[in-house]
Image (cartoon, rainbow, N blue to C red):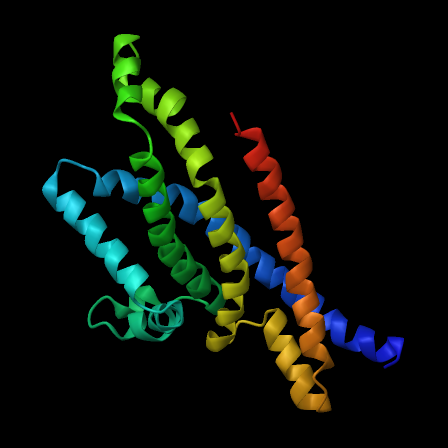
Length: 218
């Protein structure tokens, strides 16, 4: 295995890595706050809003992400009447599916974090004269983050690995180029390179989240 072959395999994978990282970043940036919004909706006293959030979370967590990817890209354009307005580029469709899916998972994680906070915290904030907004931002959310960080860390690592699924709708990411190299050369070395790339990124993510968990320890 010479250096030339290694570079021939690695170079296109690094191009695919840019797509993998882009899907990952877009999903994290959108799904985390969206998940928290669905958590608040699911806890709302307004029944229709609560039911909508609960049904959304149930459907998105109860069906495979792969199926959701294919539905967003292939299925939405076929909906009578509004289908022509729901045609997405491959990358956009991948981001939409991932954001919707992971928002549901993060919503459940945040719900668990909120349930872990003792009711006495709310009562103490009320006694101190804090408004509901101040109670949420100064008391509840910081504690929720501490509780949720390990689960968010695990889900984030899962997200990175799940980005390989976008190849099913023709998005060229790391695994796409690895399979192309294996099919072309009849050599599984490219799969080892792809595995190494994922492991390196997961190591970085794990390191970052460990630092964050230490920051929120008290």
